[in-house]
Amino acid sequence: MRAILIREFGGPDVLEPDEVEAPAPIPTEVLVRVAAAGINPVDAKTRGGSGFAAVLGEPPLILGWDVAGVVEEVGRGVTRFVPGDRVFGMPWFPRQAGAYAELVAAPSRQFARTPERLGDEEAGGLPLAGLTAWQILVDTADVGEGDRVLIHAAAGGVGHLAVQIAKARGAHVIGTARADKHGFLRELGVDEAIDYAEAPFEEAVSDLDLVIDLVGGDEHGLRSLRALREGGLLIPVPGGLSDELAAAAREQSKRATGFLVEPDGAGLKALADLAEGGRLRVEVERSYPFEEAAEAHRHLQQGRTRGKLVLRPAA
Image (cartoon, rainbow, N blue to C red):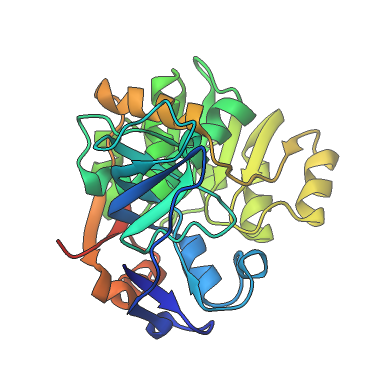
């Protein structure tokens, strides 16, 4: 099968198309023919030797965890899917899933049926970012009616999905983004949009129940803490929770926790239900053929993507 390999850690140019042996499903697994594979910041970090490079081990490696496609074969014991079913998922994370390939084999319960409303590219961009948003808002913070939620980088991959999930749960949602993306945020349902380049966000909002920090760094996290109410929760995603941030939260009688997304069939089903009901849209800024994976990573690293980028195998 065709795949995108990295034979060494480095910049985008280490991503090279090649022929590799196709996987075969073992019992409880499905073999999925990939129609689209989402590209995430963790992919670029891992490609460069950080991210989850230590988990995956030394190259050669196939990157990617976001999969959308069609079930081609099912292993013994699989009852949820049959060949021909459209599915999407985030298998194996943070172990190697090999989504930048024509075929992926993984446990069936790490996939869900793709909602009819979503095309393959939209479904390919949903799993990792969508599950990150869902597990933060629902499983970790239990956001509900009237909660005041600030989402940093609200127009990005995780951010634009988190906005919609928070709104679906009745929250008052505030999002940071450059002014040229405020129209997009309003389309998604944001109640207040803040241009972080114009003025400090912590001077524009206060008394927040939850801040989802998709920017990262201690300085940004400390500023976010100042906008929380007493007992409010900060969840810094890139880089996790540092000792400095944790100590500052305790001193201010506020809460902070790190977070890492996990494979989650139930969460995928919940995302699919929202999408099928017209309450969750997946914005795909651009899709790239496999042969342009390096260019896709260069685009990603600019840090200005609206929604998601995806890769697609040649037809």
